[in-house]
Length: 208
Image 1 (cartoon, rainbow, N blue to C red):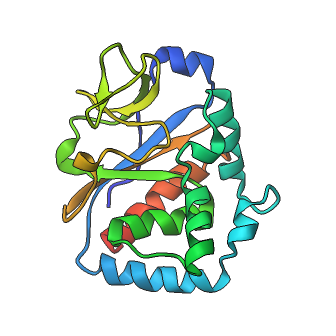
Image 2: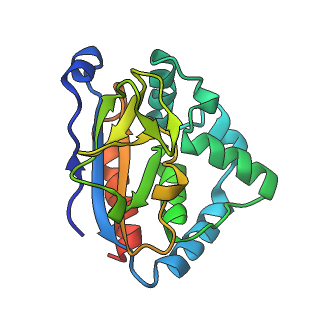
């Protein structure tokens, strides 16, 4: 598996938010990733406590920093798409961590252990390297218009997803062999954790 790479951050965003970044990696999904992912979630479910994960004292530092940054850019942290929060709410109802396939399971496992929100797209839908910028007038994601200035993950051709949000359905991996994973590095987060989270998710999928 190749090492994670830093994505470009638009100069205006880099100036306004020092420490903002993006890490990404492209990987091929190993045939055994599905069964490995299910087994990993079963092990994690034994010790996972949703109530702790939702409490300020129980959240990892990376997740707390993401919630602070969400507020800073005008997002409601509880509705911004931060994966650890969604996982905690779902698992509280289900009584366990829910498996949804190799890619989703890798992102879930990393969110639980690190507090980092990751996203994944079919590699065939990405042109060039993902990065961070503000949307331009008239841009869309998944056919829906974006208000100008919305923070997005974008490749060399188009916006791929809103900040922290899942990509639109047409980009999500289904039976794709190749995927691109990314995570946003937010100001105040431990500087190494975002890169480590992307690397770990990539390893889970590549079977390394």
